[in-house]
Image (cartoon, rainbow, N blue to C red):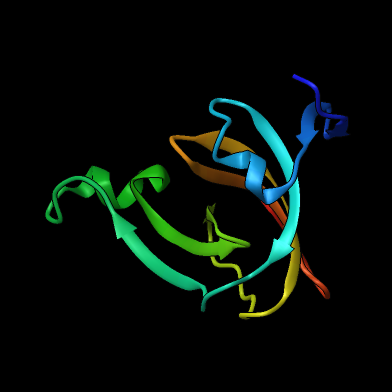
Length: 113
């Protein structure tokens, strides 16, 4: 690929523009953009609600923040309190047109998984 790279925590990310993300898949990217819609912080649970193991295993439940950054859908595992119109930098992996973020850097805060 013909994009510059940047290293974060020992992993390489392609530095791309938001428009380039839709053409990529299974690739780690870093891009900058503006949050276009109100972020949604949702609770999710997997498994059966009565299952003790579903309550004890942390991967089965938690919070997820859903963002739209300059037209790119971004999911972040955990709550990320950002606001519409804020400029952010996103590091993550593209999966089926969605960036699963590992790090989001806002104006005043850095969220990381």
